[in-house]
Image (cartoon, rainbow, N blue to C red; front, side):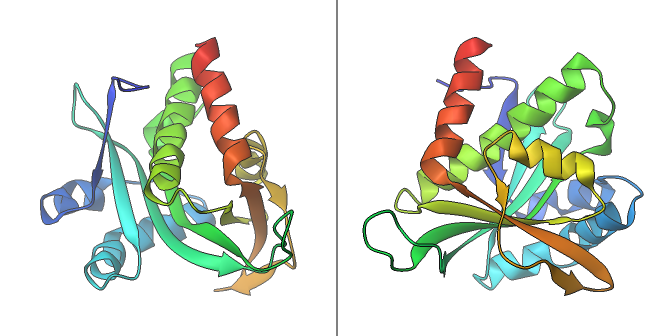
Length: 187
């Protein structure tokens, strides 16, 4: 049973490219970088096997609601028992449609539903992953707060890229899944 029956998630394919080119997260510098990645690089990276991009669509309208690019890696984050490197899902890029912006109840619910859908797909795809890692532009305090609701915390040094500073965030995959399941149960 679909947790969010109004949404469909698929792998990015050639037929999605036109819709992806129309997709936008917003006008802020961090949104422009995410849009540029999805418009110019996501499909090629997927074809090359570097990452996997998912498209979340509204089932009724087929509108693209979110895009998420995932990869698998390892990070130096001690496992509770071994102290070795941990397997991590790298949430390389994630964009919510600018149409979901604002404080409307429907927009907020759909934003969480889209994010839940991509995170659950990642956890299902890589069940041995202990962690989920991502980076957020340090000026995008809304996104930092959003990810903290999933249990993400700032981790390690901030990184510089293309004149922007990014906050590295990490969460334990099992805790993220528990938060998603609790939200679904409360809905």
